[in-house]
Length: 331
Ligand code: DP6
Image (cartoon, rainbow, N blue to C red; front, side, top):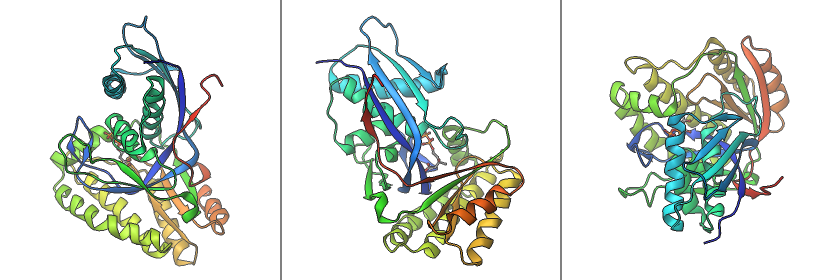
């Protein structure tokens, strides 16, 4: 078995229908399917260097050693790689977010997809996309989708060992070349992590069972709206799904309130612009920032309107992009 230094880039992804609820918390097996798109440029670059003299795995994330909760997830991925490769060599790792200022975008999805690809290469494995997606999922559920470019669907699967729980590409980015605007909200508050928030909602929200039922209806409707490039239908499903997830979070005891006033202002602005004829819709993850999808034609006026909203720190403009790929480990 040849060990080598390897590096990979993986994109951040944004869910159109959300993953918020697990049937297995160790393997990150979800209770419902979810659909996402991957972002161009925004993501993580991760380098893995197996080192026989290391006593334990080490990971530096954006120039800081990773905390112990993060390290537990990294070790789960690496242990699986070592099991498949028949190796017990530990690794030194570095991961950076390519756009450091993109706060509010989930970085764990891109970081674990990049880790899965770089680590499998570093330990001499040649994994196909389903295997790579399963491996990334062990680190963070949503990372299963960051393996792919364009639009992806993560099937929840039924098997107890997670073999059938991985993401597949639905369409490449060229299918519907929408623009993506990330309206970052100034808040400075530390948010509850997705891992913890999901667990709290499952046990403490009276809306949780209804939420999972809603996802089961929203996933096929979302896929149909994407197939027909139908923005009106997409807006209804995607906004409804995000709002239903936040309703579930808000109803949790104790409540999970991720929104700031600017979050609500963006919701109203997007709905108003759509009523006035612009092609746009919003979604919100477990945070206060809002991601807006818009047509190429409407992207500039929509971005200008969003950047004028009080409490919006910056509006990042990007596109739907490609999937995870290996890059030069020395560069
Ligand atoms: C709101 O994938 O970060 O972004 O599996 O515990 O690591 P873990 O959770 P994570 O949750 C993402 C939650 C979300 C919705 C989504 O991306 O589908």
